[in-house]
Length: 376
Image (cartoon, rainbow, N blue to C red):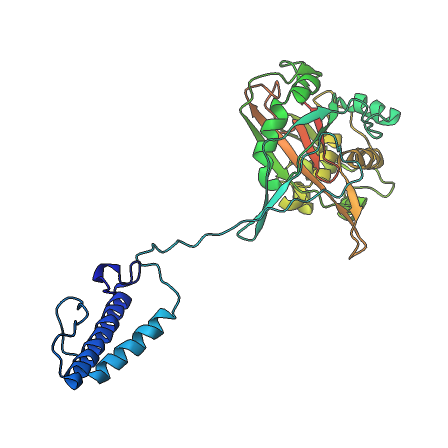
């Protein structure tokens, strides 16, 4: 049967089609030679020759055999797909969920967090933070009877409240967390701030069109009150534990007539350097300074250090969360602490003053956030 050139190697690569065509040609040539030889042997000229493919070509028997062998070898190769575009490499990212190590997680409202490793840093992808108030939250230190008496004496009027959130917190999400907290319905209806200049009592709600929260990072690494031993070691206390007095300086409207207040506020005083810059960013230092300086010019100061230290210890325990490190056996603070200085959209403090106090303390394990406020 004649073989059409159009039907040879359809769908094959051009090189393979060429060799296949040459093989078929060679086979046809051999057939013609065989027929000619047979015809000559019989002496007949009427033998009908098979049709030829295209124009006849002079192909030797050796070349024909080689072409046939090459064509048969090519037929055994897997079929190639010519002109197929090269695919660009693709990368698959697998997001693994984790669960916070806490025995108090709100399973009904909790959502799974998605940690993503990016350039060696762990960040968390969350679709906003949601909050609910904890009206029954207990603050044993702040609500202690003796503490309340001291706060009245020191002129401190404060507000403290606690909220639960349902997503995983990471410091890289500070800005969005603060914005979501201060704009949440639970916070705006339950948190309080001072109303207007001259009234430091925090009775006004936080309702307003808040767009940005200025939150200063604080350190929270101190785990014992030995942090304040330097006060005695540097001669600020007398032999009986009484705070030493000095010539008065007025710093930020505060009467600094003791070495302790000089050490806390007066940058030009020799005692100021007993706490370095990093230590002054510790949450416990800011809290202690808040106790000593008080809530305004009506503050009645203590003559002895002990009431300040005892009160600070109780309040610090209300603001932080700790756990024991299984590898070192030491107690670690697991709280992220921030000082809120300004909130765009509302007047956070009726008077701009460096001793205004507003802490946001985030317990990322139990998923609680504590808000403490006291205006100067």
